[in-house]
Amino acid sequence: MKRRWLVRLALLIIGFALLASAIGIFIFQRLEVSEQDRIIRRLPFLAPLRATEVPFRIPTPLATASLDFSILLTPDALLATPTATPTPLSAIVRVALQATPTSAPTWTPIPVRYRLQGVQWEPQKFNNCGPANLVQALRFYGWNDSQDMVAGALKPHQQDKNVSPQEMADYVNSRTNGYLRAIVRTSGNLTLVRRLVANNFIVLLETGFYDPDTPQQGWIGHYLTIIGYDDNIGKLYNMDTYKNETSLRYEAVDELWSHFNRVYLVVYKTARERELMAILGEHWDEDYNRRYTLDRAREAAAAQPNSPFAWFNLGSSFTALGRYLEAALAFDRAFSLPEPIPFRIVWYQFAPFEAYYRSGNYQQVIALAESVIESAKGYVEEAFYYRGLAKAALGFWDDGYADISAAVRFNPNFSAAVRAMNLVRGRQLP
Image 1 (cartoon, helix red, strand yellow):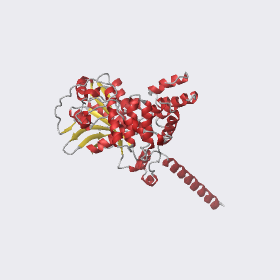
Image 2 (cartoon, one colour):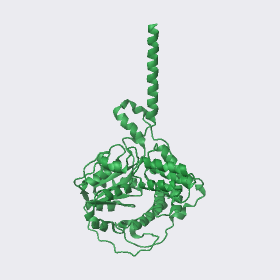
Image 3 (cartoon, helix red, strand yellow):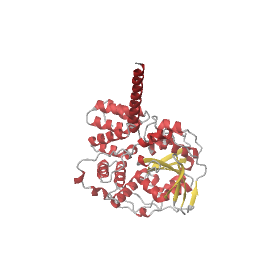
Image 4 (cartoon, rainbow, N blue to C red):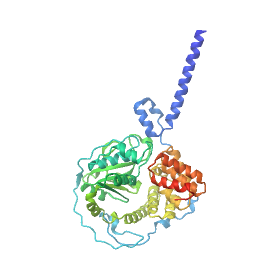
């Protein structure tokens, strides 16, 4: 009798162990690949269970086959103007508004190689790529906010997938007592980056990224703090918050940078603002930079008609100028090409949401938002924000308010969502 009881107890224990293992495996396989990798470092025997990239795809807009996308590639007007950096593409700039040409600046030659001195590596904590890169830039100028302090302001929830360049610039401009400033521009080039570095300015680039150590993770967004260059071997050096100092060939950087419309963030001492203005030239003016970016995006889409990144950048460029119908059409093209754009791109860039919302395509906003909520496991507050706006626009005010409120609870510093929540509560749309 005692032996039979022991056998039953052993079977019960084994059963519980198997059930716990099954539940653990179930939970583990539904974690983000990056989270799985953190666990595997401590429990290597789980490596065979690591997932490959989930085959999410951004929802394809309906009826795109009948649309004429070529109309988006027609320039608005022609005007010959110089640019802030001497690149071959800059001889003619097509702009919507006429401006008075200015004389081209005379550049002092920069060294063939240069390295910033005193940039300290800040290893990023979980999901802290943006805050850690900003800490590196701030510390270069002697401003010592900690990574936890920066992250607490920019992404109060640790799981938040994204901090935008503009959010980082806003942090610098509001929290350094006027000692430091930061600006964000698009359509940069490596000539400009090298000139900025050679003049001791810190430049952050937002790029696509494929980690060779974790290829199963697929494409993600990533920031690079540029600390030097060498024209002799054609390489940029950067302080990578994930891997410490690394280097990339110019062409590799440019390709990955193009995934984010070549956006760049410059952090600088306020006392040196005139020097930065001289280097950027007309690109100091945000409106000029947006119009210039649109023309570069048109050129890229015309040259690479099957590139989803090129059409995505074109949509982003139209959105920045408030041309939402054209932007939505460009995004339709980006999302309907045979080569799928990485689904995570809308974890970091929200121009498609804005374009579809402002052009009245609320169902596409909701479909796009729900795909992000599913793929990011609810950790992109902007998806809830835009789904809430779309629901409210369709007359589902309470549902819209609930979504926008969820975005605010996730990130109380999300000022646009706070304003929208108050408006939607009063049955008004932003």
